[in-house]
Amino acid sequence: MRSIGSIIGCVLVALWLVACSGSDSTAGIEIGNPEIRNLAFTADFSVDYSDEKPVALAKGAPVDEMVVIDTFRLTLTEVRSYCSFYVGMSIDLEKGLVIWPYEDEPATSIPISFTDGDLVEDAFKDINLRTEGRLKEIGVAFQVGMGENSNSIYGRIRNKDKEIPFVYDMSSVQLFELRYHYQQIDVGDTLVNLSVAFRVHRFVDGLDLTSAKVGADGVIRFNSTENAELWKSLNERFLQSFQALRYKYTDAAGEDFEDYVDDIWDGLVPRKNKNLVSNGNFDEPGEDWIFLTQLNGIGDTTIIKEKDSNVMRVRVSKGGNFSYCVQLLHEDIPVVEGYTYKFVFTIWSDVEGLITARLGGYIHHDGTNGFQEHIYVTTTGRSYEKEFTPERTDPFARLDLNLGKAERTFWIKDVQLIRIK
Image 1 (tube, helix red, strand yellow):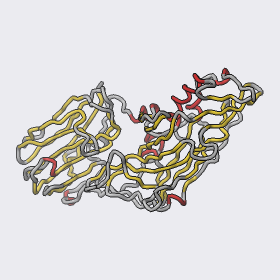
Image 2 (cartoon, rainbow, N blue to C red; image 1 turned 180 degrees about the vertical axis):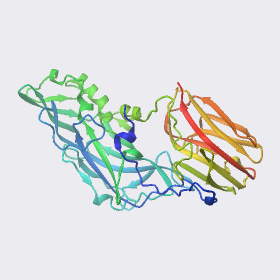
Image 3 (cartoon, rainbow, N blue to C red; image 1 turned 135 degrees about the vertical axis):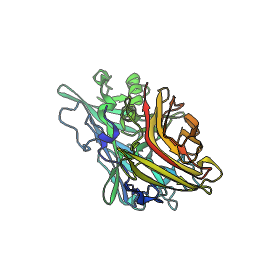
Image 4 (tube, rainbow, N blue to C red; image 1 turned 60 degrees about the vertical axis):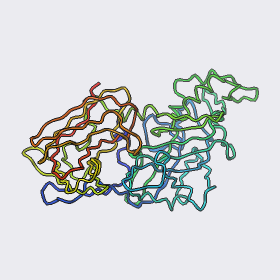
């Protein structure tokens, strides 16, 4: 299974990370504190007949396609951003931030035709992705049945020399949100674009639609009373057929559900023995690490060379009242409930004492997810390791090294978090 990084071929958001060089002259520069550039945001919507994820989005079906979708419409009701923040925010991070519709147009919605290949540009022209946080996901929400022909998917099933029209009833879902991983978004010099594709092969492959009963009017209907078993199978595949990372939906009875799109999520799940801490050896100055001081903590960072390796030096000039007053953080670590991982790193200090290392979520009240260890750091370099099993699946777990509470200098290297079982 290819990773999302290789599937997409680009990283979301152009993040201007303040970089440290490999010399001692960078003392005082924070590393990895990202900004999201003020780029225009657009979204395109399409039907995809390819087996790849994603592809150049097709607007027409190849001549040998067994199932062709002719009309597929939904109503776009909302766009949200989900970010981690290191400043005070008055929003619920779990619910994200509504970036469209705008506050002065709260009732706005947009009819979307996937079969026409709609592009939303003008309506999103005032979306501003520049925040004090780090983007995780973009969510797009739809309502079923709000517009003309928007309660069903219309198409044709090709069987030998015949083409039989069909209608798939979408009424099992009232509304839903697709949440796209930040690496699934194309970023250009002036534009951020989200492609929302409906994968036809994922929707129908493996189902014998030619066995469906044809109505007296020559139309195959998939609904709760006609071809009901096939309809149930299509319902199970409907939201999975979008190429988002995950989705939430409200069913016909008003019950709420959520899940991951399994093949996209499988692309994020790391293989065994792969270090999930990118730039864990600090070879790329400014990449992937976030240095945070708060609540009267003061410090700075420097990457220095030690023989054949790089070392992160963190100088705590004012410790604050808590260990988390000075933090070295690494976000976006995908972990899976029930798997076994090992965390390993080397650290020493000029003053012996305790620090805290933990794995949690990027939302502040997520709590610990796997381990929290109080480590006694000595003045000689020692390697520490901890095996753990996450309590919940999280594509955006965060590693915290809490270094505050006392004035001292740390040297850190060879940070690894590896799945071992």
